[in-house]
Length: 180
Image (tube, rainbow, N blue to C red; front, side, top):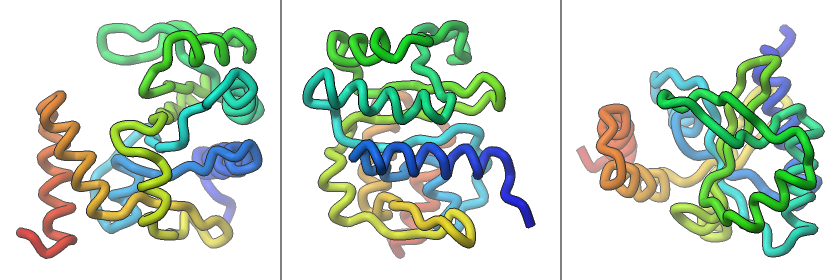
């Protein structure tokens, strides 16, 4: 059976990021789904290292642009992209100047959202050290943050935004950890 277009796009993003030395660690709803959650999600959240210099920022941006995922520069009140930067050098400059914790990418063709959290809220190296390998499909293994790290991240998210989905996710994680 042929993989879904979203899965093919995600595999391309993973390959590109890994080739650029930005190892993606999956967090958020997709990570929880791979642990068995029935939560439906329409975006993808990854943690990776923060670029240290302009060359690394360009490498990150080129990896995403090669997959036709563009750096979003403006969103509406509901968080939907309304503008993105189509020039990779300008996007890399924005990362180095603005130093955002999260870089939001958008594939307009598929209306696919990918958030890359740059050493935020936990360092990518810490997440990677405890990450679990999970199958995205029959041919692709990805790094998923550990349940303990996902718990820490959900607790941080709850403090910041008090989203009901975060409560649901935290409850799921605690059950998986045998805490509920």
